[in-house]
Amino acid sequence: MKPPKQPFDPSDEENQAQDFAQELLELERSLLSLRERYIQVQADKSRKVELQKRLKKLRYNQQPEMKVELKQIKQQLEVLELNLESQLFSWGSLKEPFWQAIRFGGLGVIIGWILKSLAG
Image 1 (cartoon, rainbow, N blue to C red):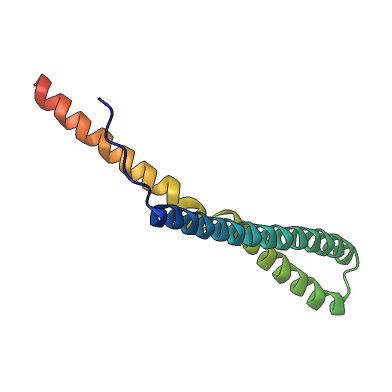
Image 2 (cartoon, rainbow, N blue to C red; image 1 turned 180 degrees about the vertical axis):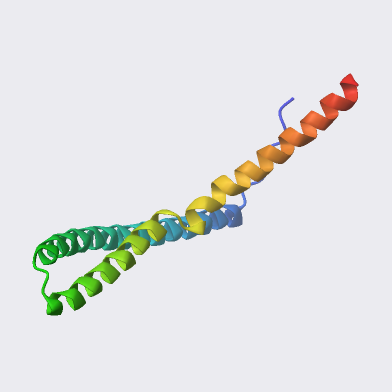
């Protein structure tokens, strides 16, 4: 048997439209954030290449005043590498896989206990 047809409710359609609009705004924000992050990563990468070239050049010229600049460049490179690494591994990007591992790992343990109790 078919379920009885429900009367048309305009509020459902409005709620769906609002939900869709909200999801669309969230998607646009995420895309904008991703685009900004991409631009920053590209700028950091090019800055890193420039600093590495400058570092090579300074290593060949071992003058006392160059040692200060050499130290500053090394510090800037460390900061850039840290920024680039932290951009790849953030809690936001690891949150979903983490909770999936917890969920399915826990489910596996429970199934294992059930099978063990049934078998033994």
